[in-house]
Image 1 (cartoon, one colour):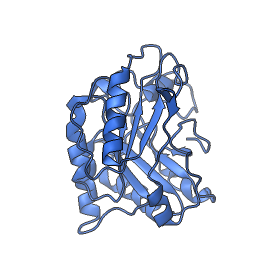
Image 2 (tube, one colour; image 1 turned 45 degrees about the vertical axis):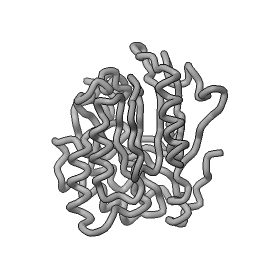
Image 3 (cartoon, helix red, strand yellow; image 1 turned 90 degrees about the vertical axis):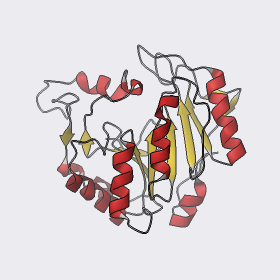
Image 4 (cartoon, rainbow, N blue to C red; image 1 turned 120 degrees about the vertical axis):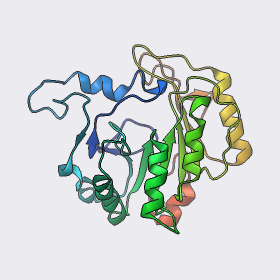
Length: 253
């Protein structure tokens, strides 16, 4: 949990849940697992339990303590829609996000069908508030069904985190999508990302008028390959949503 996140597309991270389990090949070299496992067995450390899933009710009030509006990545060290996270606890997280609406929340999952079903139950006949952005992770064309699940979810702002990009996506339907992030894998076993894969997604975003954010090439460390795609940094974000919510958060150039 950090108030000044090193993730380029957010300001802070909030982890009312930590730990997860692998479900796709995009999880193979999970940065969160790699970090958490280093602390397994260290008494009193937040990751004493390693990357085993854990709920943290004591952290639910953290956004209330942050008075300045900011963008918050929810569960950077887990997945809120993991099957072992009780629906009641998901309700608690959404309750807090709804009441502290000075912030913009970025909720990202690989469990896309569970998120879709949850949002349908919570917001029947309407959409999640515009300050709660709902997204799915996709690593290659095998994950495109998650995009369909997201599109079927009642959310005002839907986004894709195509990271780590491990292969070409091919056809990419961006109808109903508000934002696309792309990034390469980082860490000691990072798998390479091809220029053509990224440029194809960028071009599809441009044609569909969807904001495109290029996070990193990746490599041994997140910063190893830099952030420029064909000599240009891409930092676009769905700024209209911030204006509608009345947020005075700075826009990326």
